[in-house]
Amino acid sequence: MKNLIGIEDFSKEEIDKLIEISKDIMTNKTKYIDKCKGKILATLFFEPSTRTRLSFESAMLSLGGNVIGFSSASNSSTSKGESLADTIKVVSGYSDIIAMRHPKEGAPVVAADNSNVPIINAGDGGHNHPTQTLLDLLTISKEKGHIDDLVVGLCGDLKYGRTVHSLVTALSLYSNIRFVFISPKELKMPEYVKTTILDKKGIPYIETNDLEGSIPELDVLYMTRIQRERFSDIAVYERLKDVYILDKKKLENAKKDLSILHPLPRVNEISVDVDDDQRACYFRQAENGRYMRMAIILKLLGEIDFENKSHDNAIIDNNLRCQNDKCITLEERGLKPLVIKDDNGKIRCKYCEHDISVI
Ligand code: CP
Image 1 (cartoon, rainbow, N blue to C red):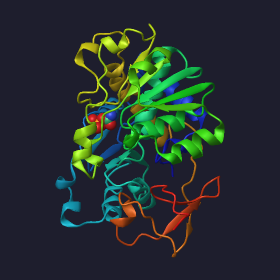
Image 2 (image 1 turned 45 degrees about the vertical axis):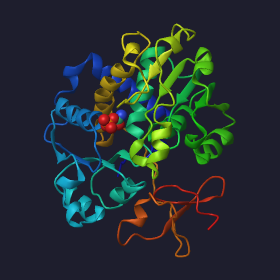
Image 3 (image 1 turned 120 degrees about the horizontal axis):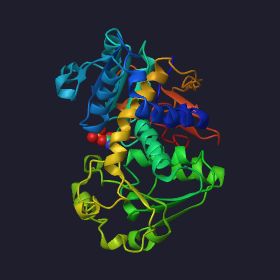
Image 4 (image 1 turned 135 degrees about the vertical axis):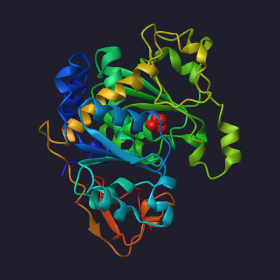
């Protein structure tokens, strides 16, 4: 069974192939109009979305397929107490592929364990958003002409912003990448990303709270929204929400070929006066999502050959429980206490990947 749970499910070669196919779809749309005739995509969105859900639906319709689904948890039977496992068992009987967004970290692993059809993680809490990362890479490739040899600044909510976790993981596969992490101290990049991905591979990064001072050296600036919905203390959100606002003035010393990306939606973090700057790529980036998601659907439905990493290397340990209060294991009934040992020997929750070795 082929699933896309985290970006590490695809090798660099597979990612490059997806980028190549997305570009081919853009220039040869008619070649693809019947590729998924008779197939059904289910979009199960337990959290709000504009781009991800609608671009997935547009992607499947553009491939000649059909779409079913719901756009909020309140429109599904989970609002009556149904478990995620039961929902997936049922929907996988109605569809050929499922794209799911869920507020709990690790929920896509539960979905994959209970599905007869491929599962696509369309965002799980503050954890991962691999399809966003694939369209981000497509955008970088189109805008810069290459993905290697870049200084990439990531700015804003690096703690809860799921897109940046997947993006750093993916960019770590490319050569000569240097990261500049720009955030307030409360919203720094999680330790697990820095230690298990960057330190392990010797990839350089610096951490700073200075956006304006960092801009001149950047090739790519990836802005993010402060994720209001992930804060347990709303007063902290109110204090931090406008900490970074990119405007024309801050771009005065930026490179002429800087690429400004943002997964969107934005709130205040990019002033609208930046939108007509050619370096602002975020609306082109959103459009790229349609073509990348067409390529992802084709790949997971077996139109393109690839090997899929298994999430089945987990072991049961009844003595270990995940302590991450945002993990799906705290909500879903009947899950086995599954853990995995990572390459550094750390014990992690199979579902949300939090380190549980110390418990
Ligand atoms: N970038 C992104 O995931 O946008 P939506 O929340 O609108 O899907």
